[in-house]
Image (cartoon, rainbow, N blue to C red; front, side, top):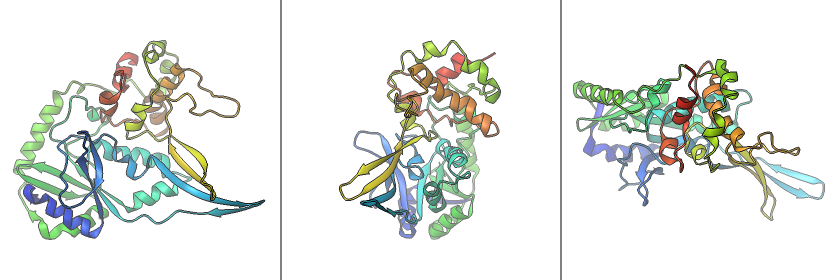
Length: 339
């Protein structure tokens, strides 16, 4: 397998950034990590995951869609779409990489979202295998192996080396851009490191969490459960869980008068907000219970019912660590589970 000494990884990132823009997970001043455009001198974070997911690269929090100019009854429509530049996201974890396939099932089906597709076509996802999974991780529940991440190119950090394996043509193109720095190497120590990580995974608090009691066929049992009232009672409706979630896909579309015309844009929305899905006649979900139920029913019942059993969660653990009242999908699953 191709590899590079760990002390040369920044040489590799510089070589890659000479060919196209590269983003890496780096620390912020507050100690959290986020993806930033790589520049010489930057350091890869030691944190397991970023505060917000890599979803932003393909489905950004805010995005301009179209502009209008009005002159009396005449309306000029300005299509502001532009071809996206090629870019690389380096260091994406297995959970976030799987989230892209979930978003693809929403935005790449007919009618295809051209904004999302443009970014997907030009983005190269270089994943990083996990070696120190956190106690909040439960990606295994959804069939994800953090020691064998998906993506265009998979990377492992073990035994003082970074190992590289291209999985797609885009991944091979990335490898070609840095090939002068790579060498063939034995994987014996890498294999040992992977096995150690797998042993750790077996001991995680959520290692035995299962989805076998969830899915589309459970709609009536869970929708009508009397447990929603107690579960939702403490929910603040703040939407934090949806904004850190790598698979949430809801957005709102708004028009803004710039003084020189109208700009139409979209921005992330949350099913936890009281004005979510609000229409002229009112809101179909008037209570926090109904909104709370919608979020978890979508992840565990509605989405798998419409996507061949694939669940709308990747077990990244962000909602476990960021919810201010410690209410999350794991607690919901355990409370609702039908034996």
